[in-house]
Length: 121
Length: 151
Image 1 (cartoon, each protein chain N blue to C red):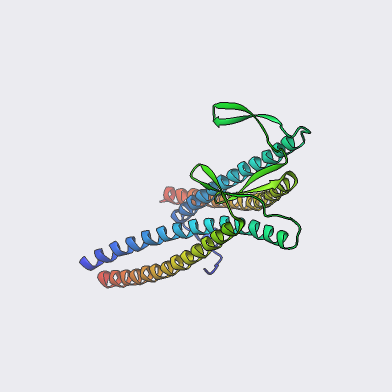
Image 2 (cartoon, chains in turn green, purple; image 1 turned 90 degrees about the vertical axis):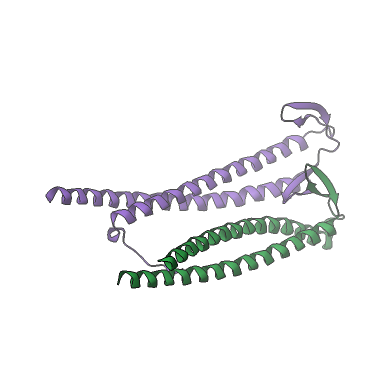
């Protein structure tokens, strides 16, 4: 009986963990998409500049708190690229954890079912 | 995830009720997303009108009221009415010419409208599904009641 209780506690815990991880995954996806839009915009500017469609890089500002700070084109490009790299890394990390937790969850469920059937038998 | 077709008829009342609740929550979420999308479209559209309004003025120094807070304004003049700072996301603002800025927002509006159409389709499907679930559920409940009465 004690074991059964422990297993169900674990089961609920893994379920919660999985929910949290899914939320984190969702959030990362949103961040990824938003950064991707910014990077696409910057890449477009770069192509325009390199093909001489525009003479100079436009002014770019980064919002820090409630003020806008001017920022170099190159700097903004590196920042966004780095940010995307970081987010992609986080996504891989979270997905690995999702897989791990899912495995644990399934294992606990199997054990629970096994224990229940022996208990009723 | 594998997709298996389950007939609504094969589900019992409890399962149907749970399914109905789930579908309702989904529908609610989608409707919420749709209204968020439409708000965004309206915002971008008003950006476009504003760009037109400001940049069409022949006088470069166009007078306008600058909001300091939501309820406090000071009169101001644009230094250059052909350049706009566009929020491209994650706190980055890029200076664009009036024409480019308009194209930028028009693209956004187009993309969002496409998304909104897709979402509308999904919502329609979901609410159709909800209707079928409800019909089957009602039928099952009536059947169950009739059986109870027979006993």
